[in-house]
Length: 461
Image (tube, one colour):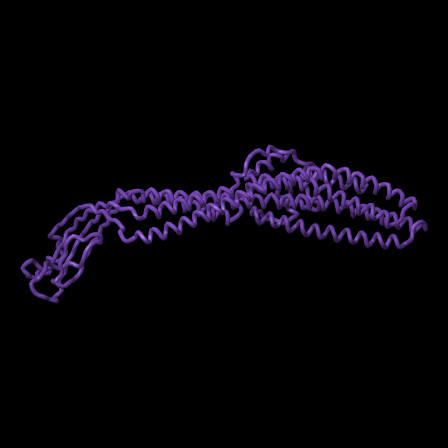
């Protein structure tokens, strides 16, 4: 009867997700699909990855923006000696202004003003701008890959934690059934001891066994609570362990079918991240290689000025605040970094080595993922065989215990033999739940290695 009551508890947990001892107030129903959705929004760290990716996207626009001309305006007013001279200023703005060149040195200061507009445009960079845009795009892709990889890893951690919760939840039910069996045996030993059919020592031993079973369940409850809190950390959920209802509890009762595993691992976010790293390394090298190419600039400058001294050296300070003379000019400039050849060659070697390092890392990830897929598929096959045999073991242990229980009542077996059967039944029930979850875990590992968690979630009922 106690064992039947435990089966009822398991069925209720499976159908309604009701935890043993769960409170009725403020309960949160959580499925594995809920975990996958909550992980993305529940962690500030993931939001930081997304924000960084959005910030990196602006670098592409900034690199393209260099095609637009740059127009700088300025106004200047001040005092300077009348020995100063002014003229077209390129590439800066203005020099201090007073008046024309004097025939003699004079340290008197007079006022001067100027208003200027300077235009600079670099329409041709001979591939340098294109390389900068390509590099910015590669950085954006790498940033996005970093976010995808972090999200994928956190989702994997969330599912793994959920599986631990489901297993511990089933373990709590199984251990409660073991406590119920021990309580029944304790009651029987008390009755048999009163009749003189069993020694009183059996009662003491059953009491010790009951205490041990209770302590084991308390330890499991502690582990269960820790895993629920870890899931809360991953998903951003709030509440106590007793406030949650986990709906995907049937994972311990059935095993998944073998999915189509023909896909490759190239969609794995970790693999994609290192591919993006290689692309960025190639873009960095291209930018350095084109850094020695020339640039063609178009410039234009227009300004008006006022001086407190005229060309004859006559000082008229109020005229210094008047914009009485206007100048303008335009031209082109072709620049080439002649002496940067050695520096560019050193940078080329440096970035070639960095690119080779990225390619080597990608090759290692390729090897690791290939082996990870093979190991996960092999584990799935082996765990499937174990899971198929586990019900046979638990059923045999259950029948054996029932027979030993009847024999103990009849005085045919002693306390030691009965407790051995009870211990074997407990282990068989735990092993059955663990065997089923190990198949699910292997299926999850296949999905992780191939970068496709749908291989796991599509099997959920």
